[in-house]
Image (tube, rainbow, N blue to C red; front, side):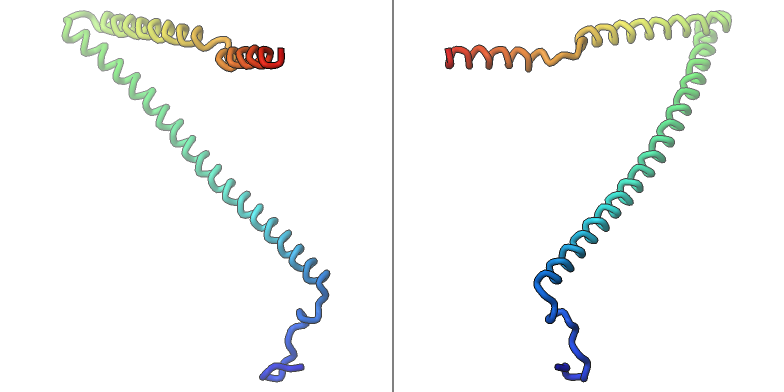
Length: 140
């Protein structure tokens, strides 16, 4: 049988149900593989962007550290000028101030670590004990 232009129609109508199911299964499998490849490509692209962002962030951090060094130099020179003391004394004052800030930050960190350690789920354990006691009352 031919259609209007004399070309025989595709043989899909002559295929058995098993062949059609096989074709659908094959195409579905191909679609899943292509979706997985797309997901891999998308993840790779995002990881590349995250990597570049991390490098830029590290560069920004390095520049901030250098800027802080110069700021502390300027502060030392400013203190030496304002207090009319020798330059080394201005650097000494800045150094003492930095050590004091480091001690305060260290003590705060120690306090926070003590509050968080050991990392056990105390509330969940207490709730499990209460649940066990309640179940023992019901079954006991």
